[in-house]
Length: 106
Image (cartoon, rainbow, N blue to C red; front, top):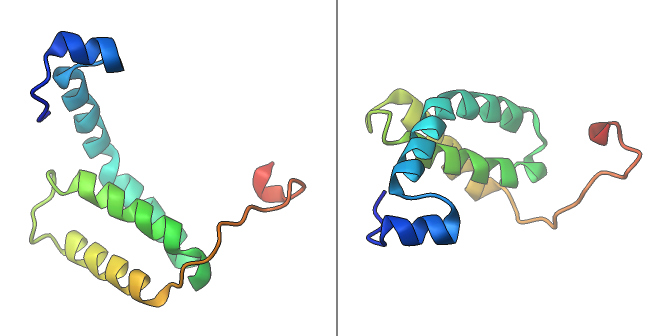
């Protein structure tokens, strides 16, 4: 990764060094396309007022994926459009959780 900190110091503070971080990022990149596909499906099924957090997560996974995908990829263009539209149409709403008896938590 881009850290200039000594590997020994990084291992002491975080339990990993630049090589470990690169391996972790490579693993996440290998999963990013599938994660984005699943999250877009979830995003499409949510009511508009509930899409904000999922849109943010899609943006994060897209950021992880961008090194592995061509900048002119139709997938990236579609993702950028989806994120732009969601930011424009979704009003910030307070975070709410389902009641404990909700089937979503079972």
